[in-house]
Image 1: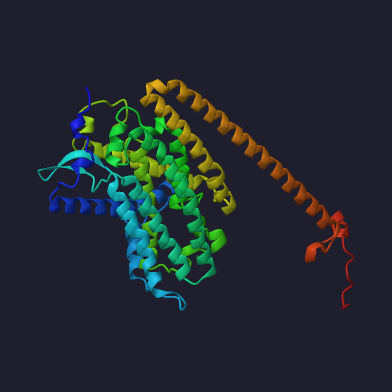
Image 2: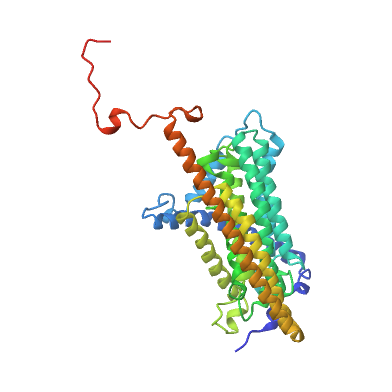
Length: 432
């Protein structure tokens, strides 16, 4: 049996709903994200506790299900404090800027094809645009302003450093993430999310364009500032990063909600662009599995699995250094993306224009050889640099060992008697 293609919505199917249907879909999306935040926090705590062989939340409600609700009530009722030197307007505005764009970015995610909602045939998606993916990228970039303003308005050195880290991080990883979408656009022929899902009818782009998918997975952690890339709030270095001056009040709750919504948006985009969206797993080529409200189940299963992967990475990997983070973004992800886009463009040219097959094959081979040559060149240069740095460190260590006061810092000599097991002579009692 084959799919009912008429059930697959396109951009032309949007903008025709009555106003009350649009309001209902907006409320449904809001409730989904709010409930996802509540249960997402609980699920993350439970999954990590299971991985670390401990119980996790188990006091508030059955299985600790009400723990997140209790935390939200506690933060909402706590005294709202303002540090003396903060810029109050921006200090209040920053958490809002983190939450609102995350809600807007999720509005372009399709949950199912055409469904019957209170007697009206409508796509189960709030809105779609010819440039829907660009809208998502724009909302992700705007939410970073909340982090930067939270750090700057706090008038704290640690908060400011966290905000600046976030700004630099989003510049590098926003570019790499945008480039990882280009191959999807080339094969789908559109930037509309509903039509990108339709283009994955036979093969998911996670399989067809696996390098783009892997690059996006790395950028997803950098964009959402999740471990191992949560440098803007690294408590081991910056106390609490950009949120250092936010007490456990409603503002802090909004910041936490914004971070989780940002993670959910990245998860929804991964499902939509690379994992077939609401489509059933590939072997299930049945009509009933792709019509009505059944596709919501497939979307939700993929959504939970991707979020579980994010939690698993958090429980498994340590935080990287900031120079390693930036080096990965600028020196690895962006060059790999550019070479991969050229190769995909050549292959796409072969598929579309059969007459230029020879030219496309030659171009693809040249691109692959050039990319390998560039990678080997950079790898050789990096290896030489590391060897030179190691030699310099060894020389400095030897110099410090020979000079007890090298560099102005006292270094104890290595020939003291007690270093060789010789006991100090005891001082007779009664002497000063």
